[in-house]
Image (cartoon, rainbow over all chains, first blue to last red; front, side, top):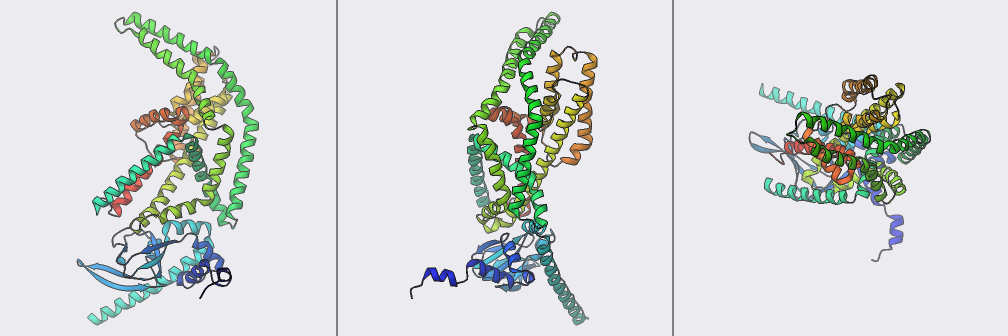
Length: 167
Length: 350
């Protein structure tokens, strides 16, 4: 079927709309309004990874948070010389968020297990953005804090369970 | 992998040298671009501050530039008549200064010859003062021809704010575009490097400007208080000279020494003590209080590097080149230090 590009442009959602919708669906940005998402979008970097390509290595300094727009990644960690798979993450999930807060080396290696479109928010960009837009920066930090505290509670619970199972 | 990375880095370095060299040869664009970059870096924190208060970026930058122009024009209206008067009066006295200096050198050489006839100082000094007078006569000419070579002063004055405006407005876009060409492997390291280098350079330039302004203003005021002729001009030169590490105070003091030589009422012990005291007090306050607070120890250039840089700067762009090259070398030093540090941390090099 032949498409009418003029009407297509009028009625189809443009790229900006799709990226705004996508970012709004990510938990760390769900408190942001459309205008705020658009301002944040200017600081984000779109990266393309081929299957098997390393996003970052365990032990390297971290400097960015990554959000998977398309594809899948595998997170591995070295345990006594052998790497163990911790988890697989897919579209809409994010990783590397701790790098926004501390300077300790990455705790795991992330490899693209499928071809990936990943959106990166670098630490320097996030600092600069928060200086310019403190209210948006605070909303993101509050959401990240909430997510990290939930993870900490879950980890504590798992440790407790492991301890009691070994007791 | 390391050899591949090494090869890539080698090609990248060659490319960087070619680009840097080409830009350097097009001095007419390089100098305004460098000055615009300095201005953009100085004004950036102000833009960020007002942006955090909810103002639009374009409105902030436009207002800053407007205020900057008003400030510059006011400065010109108030200071330029006095300065230009002092400069023209000084240039009239320049031939007199040269002949006085020549006389002093000849006198010194003759007395030296009498004491040490085997050295033949007269011949050496003849060459020395010939080169001195040539340099001094040429000093104004170098600056003049430099500016006239740069298309013209008006184009220069228009290019600097034009570049500075867009560098301020679209710096993040330029950075984002550059990062989009960086391979995934080096994305994070480059993101950090851009940030750290930008921050260090910004702090260095701001610190140097504060330091130089302090020296310039205080020397000018101090010399005015003691009634020294051409105080404003000497202060201005002392401030500009302060950009050059180690030799700055000497460079800044040269005009004062020359003026003292031709002004009988200042060429005496009390006059010398008064002028030296002004320079000394300003330098002591600057060294103890202003420099550590404004610049710190972030960019310490080795004296040998400073001398080499000054020689290269003078070859490339005369007096202007000598002043511009020191901040440029400092920027390069910070860049290489950070590049080396992060390449090690990311295990790109061992």
